[in-house]
Image (cartoon, rainbow, N blue to C red; front, top):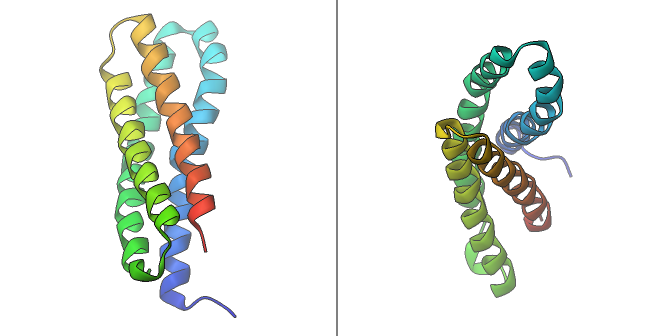
Length: 134
């Protein structure tokens, strides 16, 4: 059976935003060493350009995440599913907070630490979401 038009829009927006948030972090992490070799200042410019796309995508992820929850009959979900959902929400918070702290970091260690946590938690959120999909 095909999804309804509204379900298709909701899920497409969520997947597109995840592609930008998660995929963009992975892509930028792969590009940073090359960008840094070309020009250390270019790294900051690339990060700022990514932020203009990634933060709106994160907002869309949060909004469509709540929309997704509204489309589910929570009373029919198992306790295990609800626990995994709680873990996902916690990891989403970690992903957003660590990405924000990465943008505020002044040291190389801080940038690396918060960037790593942001990237790993973004991927973890994606994987957990796949397990929650019905």
